[in-house]
Image (tube, rainbow over all chains, first blue to last red; front, top):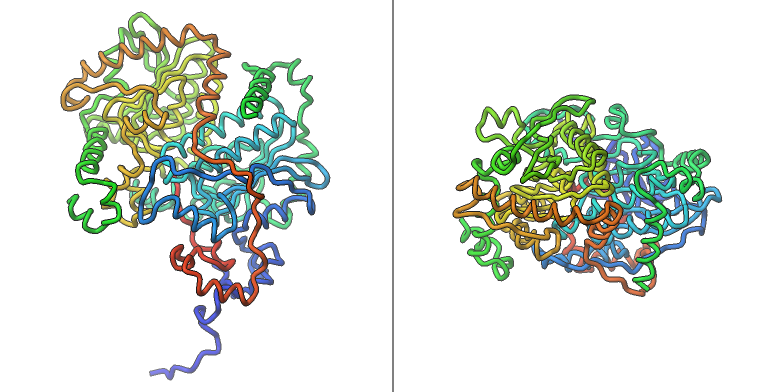
Length: 306
Length: 333
């Protein structure tokens, strides 16, 4: 019988969780301050931790270039949804915990001097789920990119559509895809950045539709959660299923980009994908519908809102 | 069983009377009834002619999705719809009505044909969800769904979408974008299956009926929310009891809508369709200052966190930067 010696390796639970984080890949204990400094990448194994919207914006855009838009949007409980708690209670709890109003932040800023429209999601707010506010912010980001001919960058981090908003959340898929169709026809570039996780209705709408799809290494990206897939089809799932590299291998991601290289990669791509001048789009009319007509109707909508 | 559910969830019981919950669950069962008429059965009853088309020209033909031409009351249309099987053998061939990416790509092919040859589109939606397995992911189910949604928002031809049975999330909306959306009385429409919703929010699949009620997935609820424009009543006990009468009722609505939409110029249709979907979702717009992130956390903040009741209410999401590193929530649709 071996003698149990006292271990000098402290157990995980003796660390105050506010100070230390355990890396899920290499089990290294990381000092949180150090982790924040390294853009939340594990210095030992390169594991990419999730980023808050605020940290993501700081990482992506030139310093102090970000101007937020539509910061006042807030979801309304259209269904009167109650599960273990009411939906309004869940919203308030998420707002208190994150200091955000909903799971996305949008605005404009510059990347290496080039002005862009951005929308950034935050998994910390109700799993980054897409309800009316996220759908609206994404759509408005697209519409602003369209109206001002700014390259569009959307960073996704979401479990999918927000169940508490029912089919109204499902309709956000249509809203965002419809706007992106206009952007595509108008010759304005859209770069989609997928981070951990990008699943469900967010993946199956705007996130997958980038002119260029970028993804961070080893992020969970997929349509149906592994649990749903395993439960529905009763078959073993291959290793690495629904990870960035799996999707890359099957041709749905252009480039797997390490977080520290992300800003440079996007800046590089934007030197190739420059918004087509309006006159060219109008003259070519290569698509079957007129983006110019839509620009006018968008202007009408703006006027209606007054 | 309902009593047992209520016993466990007294909070929800105030809202959800056993009657309401039972009625909702009854509808879900009717929507899933094995003898409920599907796309091809309905068309066989209402069309003078059907020409089914096959294959996505890239990978294969998906039995879970039926597409083609049909003539209804002298009007030529392109139809698209999921097709469940009526028995086990057919269900295996049709994959229980759960299309793979090639199914949606076949549908897109048919709908693009419709636009080019100025034929209106009628879609029949009846799907538990798009197929969620590895083959589906490998071939890009999310991409196929997103492209199909995008395509339908810009097609310059009238689109009538009919929810005939289960409107299961992304797999449904991929072919359910329309100028007008119709639902059969006992059809259901939801962002996630009630079982999936219950498993995530109630941590128990037994609460599916409660989840179904909370998501307001019945046709009447969807009409109230504006997601559906029109509900068509079903004969007798439900559509499964009388295919011919169900098809007859649907046909008169389809014909009326086809004639109405034919009067609208395609450009106006597309603009109106964009606006129809643009306004979905309820939110308020306050003039409050932009989001201010919580300040850097000092010792005092952390102590306050420990005492903060919301920390316990929100479970693991309260305070501390490690909150973002929980396992994925998988709140997928």
